[in-house]
Amino acid sequence: MEAIIWVALIILFAAIEIATVGLTSIWFAGGALAALLCYALGLGVAWQIVVFFAVSLVLLFFTRPWAMKYLKPHLIKTNYEEAVDKNVCITETVDNLKGTGTAVLNGQEWTARAYEDGKVFEPGMIVKVKEIRGVTLYVGESDAMPQNKTDAAE
Image (cartoon, rainbow, N blue to C red; front, side):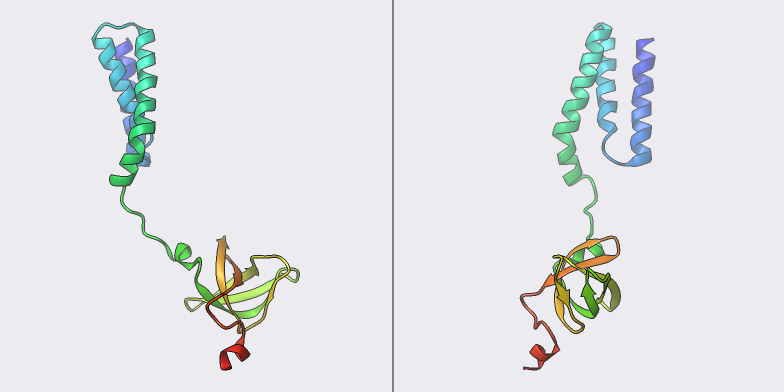
């Protein structure tokens, strides 16, 4: 009976891993396999359970970081992630109190808000994207670019 339970758990955890591809449940399948080996060696149920949890946790905490680094495909940054720290041009006054503001990023207009409350940015100013929440850019002063059209003309 115990062997059937361990085999069922191996199949269950492997199926969950195949369905989710999260590199999480496969380690518990390894623990169930170790517990099945304990059963085959004639160890009691208590030992099987201890070995199941011990092996599962060791695999999860010590091999998962390595597996995530080398086995999982490298993630490619999306446009969203690359936007942080980029300079954008303000097209409508950014004023958090009034709830207004737009900016152009890579040719697309985004809703924009000041990263720091109380800051107001006028149209034509070049600001830096500090953070993105949802579909809103949170912007702050840019060190590298002129702060308005008149500065750019000088």
